[in-house]
Amino acid sequence: MNATIRCLISLVSLAMVMPCSLARAAERSPNIIIFLADDLGYGDLACYGNPVIKTPNLDAFANQGLRLTQCYSASAVCSPSRSAILTGRTPYRNGVFTWIPENRTPYLRTSEMTSARLLKEKVYATAHVGKWHLNGYFNQPNHPQPSDHGFDHWFSTQNNAAPSHKNPENFVRNGKAVGELAGFSAPIVADEAIRWLKEDRDNSKPFFLCVWTHEPHLPIESDPQYQSHYSGIENPDIRQHHGNVTQLDAAFGKLMKALDEMKLTDDTFVVFTSDNGPEGNGDNGRTRGSTGGLRGRKRDVYEGGIRVPGIVRWPGKIKPGTTSDIPVIGSDLYPTVLAIAGAKLPDDRVIDGGNLLPLLTEGKPVERSRPLYWRCAIARSPIKTAMRIDDWKIVATENLSRMELYDLKTDPHETTDLSTKNPARFAEMKAELMKLNAEIEAEGPKWWQGYQHGGAPPARKTASK
Image (cartoon, rainbow, N blue to C red; front, side, top):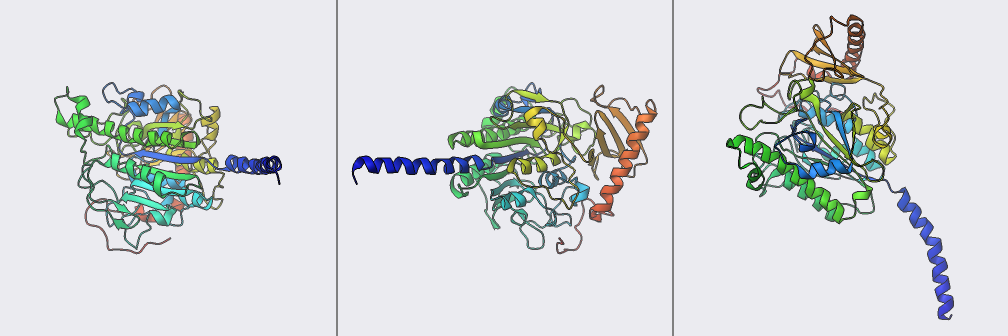
């Protein structure tokens, strides 16, 4: 066989193979990253109006994607918000109704079909790095661990980085304690995510990666290089807090740069948000987070406790440098990532979240089967429950004996209760809230009944499904 004939045969063979290869490439689902900050307030980022804190990486990210101006966490405290992100179900429905101390009962049951489990079934490589906080018995056999919820790889803590963000010593990697790590928490978490992307993941699969940092949750410790941006501020606690947000920003930027270097950016859907509003009163200690002027803070179901930053980037799908004021909530991420991956929603349970793809790609409203709903058992005030429909928001005590009504379009700071001025709307919202609240209470485990927050834990119990 002469060289000319061999060349022709090679070209024909290549032409036959290329369409199949291109088809396989086209069929490959997008990668997905959920980057979750801890206790980051609505007004803590420069791109959300903060005049002091420097967040250049997240500002650049917002210019590359869509900034959500009415983005909500699913709860006013951490564990419930995280449970809703992974299940699409409001926390009192999925059982994680409150923050989970060590050696306490609430946990994310394996009967909940997490996005990680469903995406793993769709041949995704899955990993969780950072704060877990979805069980009380962390890295112990009687509660489900991240691997039981579909994560191939995990590098996590039960709750906070301990003893602080500096040199944490409580990380566990795939069931084995890591010991003390040199450095600061958010960069350590980002480095683990990058290492997994480069060294451990199966490159033949798309990936689903949760990066859940501890910053700026207490106990705050910030690298001096990030505090140096605020050297003109006399109060060291403020320098620590602001530096902590900049430390978080730098870790996020490092991960985004790694995506660029690995040529993964164009094929990766990335969402950045927070689990609830800022800690403390904002006036003392290192709890200096900003709500952007909204009423309330962490543990409040008023806007300052639940409205958080939300930024989404998906090159070629989401128009860069855009904003949306359509309300979204953390539980919406569940149906959204499943839709991106081409996975089906479970049809044997209520999914509270709505698919955000029409909003993200076309600016259309989110279709919902249930209104936005919040309930915080350890609210800082008697107001513990809230529901939003369109621009109307009703808030109530836990037993629904007292309620207030607000029009968020004209009164985003919730200054004027309209329950007596608009009795027809109030009656309508009240009836809807009572109906929804009863439905949720009837479905979820009754761990919230008689639960004692704080104090000594109850007797050790084996997990149920």
